[in-house]
Amino acid sequence: MRRNTVLLWLLIVFVSGTAVGVAAHRYFAADATAREDRRPPSREQVRQEYLAKMKDRVGVDDEQIGRIVAILDEARINSDAKRQALDAELKALQNYTRERIRAVLTAEQLTRYDAWREERRREREKHDSGRGGRDREKAR
Image 1 (tube, rainbow, N blue to C red):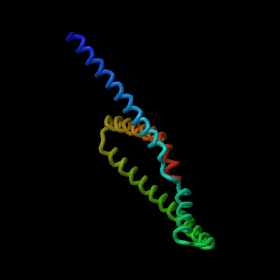
Image 2: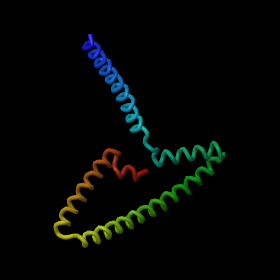
Image 3: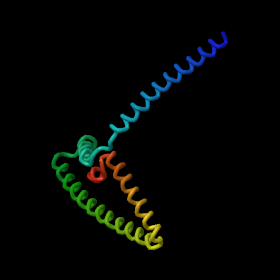
Image 4: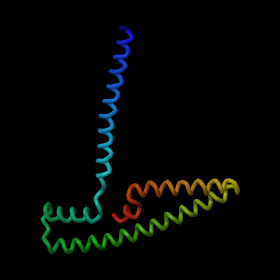
């Protein structure tokens, strides 16, 4: 009889664990799917929402919207130019830093350093492709 009780308890524990595992999988799998659907809005979506709120909440008319659109266009051009200049500066700084680090390393270390950097580059590309890529992020 004692053996049957032990087997019954083992069966109860196994069935309970299976039920909890199934429920947890459904909960977390659904949460992961929901996270993938929550992408930030594009630049154009933000712009259209902004203009709609300017009309609804501030009360601007169509003539004012036209002038505001021109201002936003100019701001976008200026900010894109500044962002490109900053990106170029940062890339130059990264290259300068990398070359200074390489100057410190021995020939054997340089080989391992270059291999490690290549591995990191591939991991970044893999990660970026999973998110839609950097180009898509910068387009926003």
